[in-house]
Length: 265
Image (tube, rainbow, N blue to C red; front, side, top):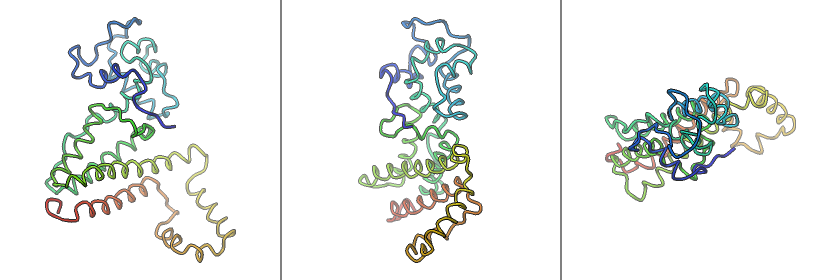
C-alpha cells in the first residue's frame, strides 16, 4: 500500500511539522478546536512515538487514531486536540522517524566514506521502520527532519566539489539506490511471515521444479545461471544480500561521480 504525503489540511500539517518554530511552543493544542481536554502529559511527540511503535510492530494497516489513543491510555478524541486526523499523523510520523539525523558527516576520511556513512544510516532507518518505504517520494512531507537527511547529503557532495550538472542526478540516484535496496530487503524479510513459506523452502521447491521443467536452462540462459551461481541460497539472508547489493551499487555510483579524483580521492 502506497501512502502519499500531504493528504491532510496543508496549513495544519505544515504548522505541526515545523512546530518547534511556533511561538506557542511545540506541544500547544489548537485553542480554536473544540475537543475533550487531553490527558495530562500528552504531547505531540508522545503521540508520534506511540504511532511509530504501532507501525513498527504491526504495520500501517493497524494504525489508527483509536489505536494510538489506546496505547497512550486515552481516547482518540483527546488526540485530535494535538493532531487533527490520521492524514496529518502520517506526515508527522514520517518526519519524526527521521529525527536525530546527523546535521553533517565528517569528511576526515573523504567524501566517499561520508556518503557511505549517510547511506548506511538511511538503510538502517528503513530497516528499523519499514513502513517508511510505503510513504511515496513523489510528494515529500516537507518537514525539518526529512529535510536534514537531504541537507546532510548535499553538504558532503558540495564538499566534494561535485559539478552542478551532476548534483541533482547524484542525489536522486543515491536516494533511490538506498530506498530500492531497503525495499527489497524488508519485503523479503516479511515474506516468510506473510506467506507461511520460508525463503529456503521457496527457493528449494522452485529450483527443483525448474530443473525438471527446463533441464536445458543453463544452456539457454548461461549468463543468468552464472550470476545465480555466484551466490548461495543455502544460507540466504535477504538483509545481508540487500546490503551487499547496496554497497556494490554505491561503489559503482561513486566511481562514476568521483571519476575525476580531486577532492573525492
